[in-house]
Length: 305
Ligand code: GLN
Image (tube, rainbow, N blue to C red; front, side, top):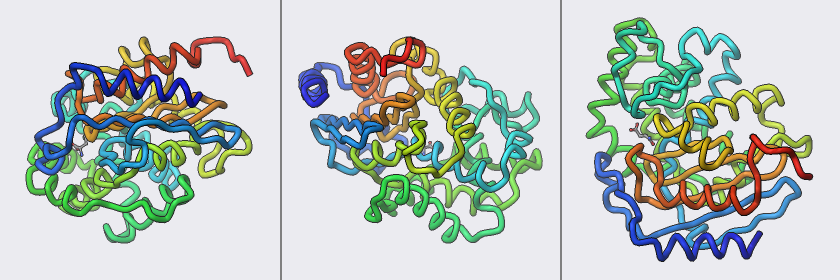
């Protein structure tokens, strides 16, 4: 495993096309695109890493996995009255389907759906309390109390996030927003601004690995369902391509991080800031493809324990 990760990091570092760093959040535009890290936390308790695996990055939409777990923990299946479970086939920040589908976002991983999950775990709390809850969840999943929110990134997104504000206002106009647009957006942007290294993210992802000895933050059934949504919706309109190339549930973020789960085996985090045409990490996707090919790990293959 260690040799494989070292090889993947070497291939990534020498790749001529590293994709484009997100620029619509000004703080993210400053990130050096030459960085690459990967970390694997296996179900038998080993941790392997290569490249810049200790460098914290903005997890952005990877946070939607933790937000979904929190929202489901709070309201259970009632969440599905407010958000769907189908891929949208559109970019992460699209508003197109929201009008046609009466303000019920397609899934919890596009921005509109994530605003609903944030609204759900925020409901009845102040943003500070809700974010405290989110940090508690992530820190306990990773077993690392140093995980924090980058305030500058959160502010940078709040100051420029017209698209997300319009999504939130549209949801509010359809009666699918309870806590108020400003509070939800503030909480959402702080949630997206959580920083983690590949090592921390891989450790945090273990709650989705589905082994009886993994941290029991969510029930077995919920774990399977979150994994299913990661597979079908975790990479937006690139979800089919990620399933085809990698074959593992995954969630990407515009900070260049990807969390992928090999059920029963491992949680894998990869990071490279340059994005592809879908807004998913370009080298991160390529690295995950190489990883899946070399290990043979895929939810579509026969298990080889
Ligand atoms: N905070 C980002 C946004 O709402 C997250 C998007 C992403 O990572 N794909 O635009």
